Image (cartoon, rainbow, N blue to C red; front, side):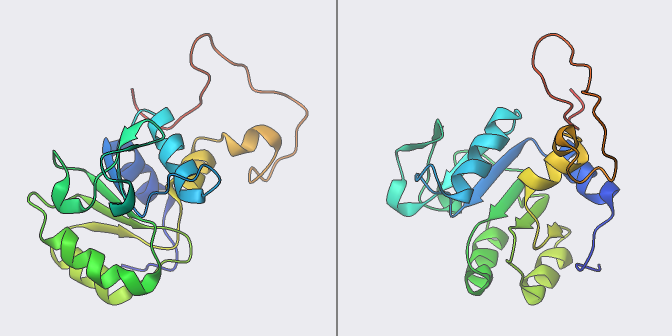
Length: 173
C-alpha cells in the first residue's frame, strides 16, 4: 500500500467501521493533542481506551486508562499510536501479541514506520501513518468546512442544522 497518500474512501471506511480505539500515549494534560483526540473520539461515539502507564487506573477525558495494550479489558478495533516513530516497533510487537488483533493501526501526525506497517499489513491489519483521526473525521464530515477551511469553497451560507446532536459526522448511525 502507498502510505504517502490515502484515498478518502479508505479513511472513511476505517472511521465508519471502527467502534473502539486504544490510544497509546494518551495524555491526562488537557492541553496536549492526545487529550484532544481522546475527547473528540469519545464525543463522536467511539469507545476509547487511553493507554498511559503513569495514569493507569485513573480517567483521561472520562475514560479509564490502562498501563498497556495487554491490560485492555476487551478487544479493540483500532490502535492509535501517539508516540515517536522510534517507539513504533515496540508498540507493533505489543499489537501483534494481542488476541484478537485490531483491524486498524493508526499512527499520528509525524509518526511513520514503514517496516512496522509492512509487519502489520502481513497480518491483515489496515495501517494509516502520519495522519490524525480527529482531523480526518473533521475533514471528511465537513465539520472543518463550516468555516470555509479545507472545503475549496468560500461561502457565507451556514449549514442547516437539524435538531438534537449537531454534527454532520461520517458515522453511519
